[in-house]
Length: 425
Image (cartoon, rainbow, N blue to C red):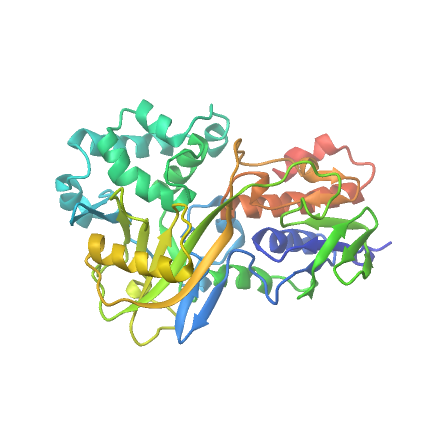
């Protein structure tokens, strides 16, 4: 049978599914992606609402991600750089802190900021240097503990942990208590230090659109829901059966496989967009709310960077990571009260809310990479997605690539898997 004649299905058109398709295409296969919604992207989507460009959740790309550098054309994405720092709101005042080694304009504000001691700020720079000399493989092989425990062991004061690390990394980890593995902290901290946080000019969905544009021999089935995956066929919600030789599940798999004992736990968040007449933060830098009584965690003026689509007023993105039981009306009211009380932002007009129930996988043991054979759970079924490794776009890309390589290995009978693994790493 020719490679193009194999029926290989990928369930999920997010980052991981698109990378799996690209990897298969590069070896002459012609996969089919089955997507439950009407478009690609998974958790990486952008909407245009009343002319405003809204990402599904405040997301940035770290341009130091190894897999992003491998698979994306940065110039074509027209990446807009964020200032490597943050404006921190606390006790009715604001302080700006950042990395003066990459942006000299941050030096004075960082040194005089009241968010931590001078010793804390030196430790931040020292940690940056320390992690630059550590490989990603070494980071993910280190002993795991909570990020809070890690920071305390590094000698940071409770003041800098509460005022900077907690609100900053709560927005990344989507949990407010720094319970996330120290491996993830070191990984993210290292890549922030080695590169920049950037946004595509057309919104975060430009990443998945670019990946889709690299596919020439992949068929898409949109608005198609899968109810079960079996060895030789895929059962759709309408009871139609699709014959398949191999299937890659690049989405939550527990509901699709009868013998899968583990179910991914997910972190959630609320992302609310407001229009305002003017910006209170003029530069492209994230705002963090460090007051313990605040519900909101971070905010960003989306038009502080260039965008393809721009509404009549300024666009403000606000993220909530703390758990709450508020209905939408009360949530909007509480967020607007917080914006006024803690950030001196008045007269905001609600535009849209994204309640993201599966924003990031909540994982206990994190890994950077895996072998293609580790993605295989049944002879013809493979798993992909960042939940295989760690909650990042980089991990989603790796997992998609590895699952596709696992299928390719399964098709190449006679080749020893352990001899191929190192070639694919």
